[in-house]
Image (cartoon, rainbow, N blue to C red; front, side):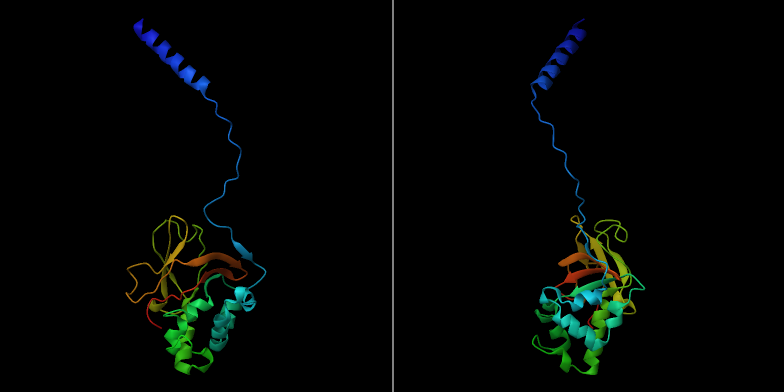
Length: 211
């Protein structure tokens, strides 16, 4: 009998607490996934978009592509590639492309010789991955796990590692499996979708080994 009374008393307490709550019904909301909205330029190839020079930030990339004759690699849409598009700061910043290729941050690409032009071409080829890699889970299924991809630069020197962090940002060339001379970054603008692939915009260049 005592057990029944205790249960009845507990029920009254719970009922009193619930009846005293004055919680308003939550307003409905639209769920927004962590992965950012894609920047859609599907009516253009990467090269067509770069030639519009958005933000006046791709002057050196346009020069470099024209100088090395890689217009077709940025234009053809028979395959879906990933393009790591270098802004002007990637060329003119400390240790940037200009300094690596010409020896000076104020050097001009038009004056480089054939050997340096080939190095510049290899650098640009390294910034094109022969697969479609966005922030989505299709290619990067597990967070913080390095996945390896082949760029258009042949051989092991053309390998690149990518992983997604907890905020779905892409981290490039962080793997210890790559040579110690590697150069990586996490500072990119992601998911620019084009007719011939997806692009990520960078203010620093990448490498596995020196070009």
